[in-house]
Length: 251
Ligand SMILES: [Zn+2]
Image 1: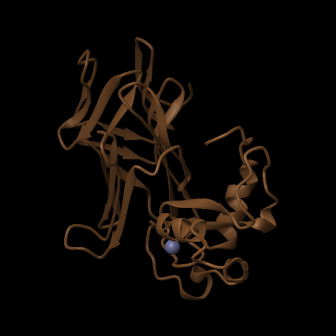
Image 2: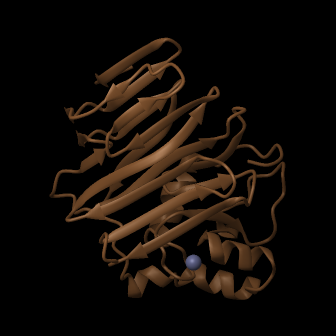
């Protein structure tokens, strides 16, 4: 997102995900991953797919510091970690419906739970059972710091922290993304095949909080949503200017 580089063609994401079997090519961690430019990043150019590889935050930083040689990266591209050894489990089988507990609400097969000003602030989709998360982290002043599209992040800052763990006491999978010195955070747990999502998000200077009590619009207290079930709604909560729609099939 830094510089003027045009966006990646959308099929890049799909093809890189497929190539690395939904994870970091070096270690297999499925979420979140970034597109790394093996031959170096150039602001005005979209590199060809042959020079791009999906890496997790840690391995992306190592590669940026030249601590993973180019030859090794090209080797990992041909033989990514997850292709033979996939042991990660950021997935819900496609045969099971996707249930997300967001605040004290239940969203069933609703891929865009929170949309603010036509931007997906919380998105959860599946591809071959693998969970694909989208989010955007703005700060209080409406500056965009982190954008995650279908598990692939781009960021204008390193000031965010990612934790991915599996088989903990609290959850089968636990993903937490946090801005180090700001309030935005996203916390996703998979427990018993269902998603549990909490977080804080800013947009236009307003703070939106999702906790186990509901979804709140803090500044004007526009919305408190608790105890609701949305079933196959495409869009969950859509906030656009003064208008709030809950449970839309199309917007
Ligand atoms: Zn990795």
